[in-house]
Length: 192
Length: 272
Image (tube, rainbow over all chains, first blue to last red):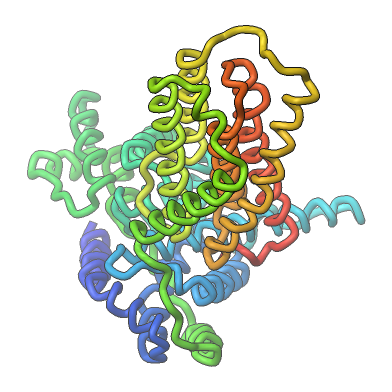
């Protein structure tokens, strides 16, 4: 539980530093290199967590992260000053993740058509023991619920921020979170 | 580990529910005591309260991303505020519709009663504001959404259908199919360049939901065409209006959605 408190404190520190993100975004739009370096440094861990929990290998998560930053860079003019930054970032991250998933599906379909899949290949890329449990649990949720949980729990966003990033209402996000939580509770109870 | 009553566990569930949506919420003393003794609740708490192990990124990757972005860093002009975008859409809509009405005439206006003019005017104005707002919000990822695009379209479609049925006489159209078809063709001839014009206004926006964005552009263009013909066509019967005028709005919104979807499939990197 001490570990939990420490991590919660780290998350609070991360959130405390979010207040000047809009300012950094504006400086980034003006072309200040220091601003983008700071944004990459601050936001990449959260984005990496978001991609890592999408049932992909670390290498694929890093590719998604790089791809996401390129998209952020190309879309930087669409950030409106004084708007919250995280929903803007995660709306783009969400689509990067979705496109990555579609690309993997297309590749997998092609590979199945071209040749038989060799036996003994792991169905999922490598993951350490601690993460496997959470990933397994998240993997059993419907996609829309999983996405909400990833943003709320893994990336530490608020309900309002998740609603903006997913273009839905706070009520819908609350409902999805509660349904997901009830399902997770069932799964955790079964595991015992 | 003692076996706790399900009622006590349910109280913990309720507390954890609250914590789940507001991670800063404190756990009560009572809950803390229960957590010390109940393995089931401990397990749940660990999953919910603890942050996943930080997925740090390697300094090399971080450096690589930073240098990639800095290499192509130039100042950009941010897109205007939502209000400004809405006003731009409305201005373009009014200018385009006004120019066409000036050329084609307003024969339809003379055929309508005051109630019909007011009713159809309110419908068209409401639709224009609704779709302008929807487009302006879609231009920036992570914008606050009112109602989802598809729901807005369905609501507007339902209201328009009801409005036309109530406002205009429901009788056999006094036009031949050839003349009615001409109305639809004229609307399509207006909608296509109008869609191109609206697309020009939103071209800098990343198409995160290309189908929804395409549908909104199509709906705006279709609505512009409906507006021009609503005031330009002399056949003001409900059936004629619905079948040959307003159907073009549905067709252009559908075509826009399909085009958006199609274009996104062939440009995987476009979303951003």
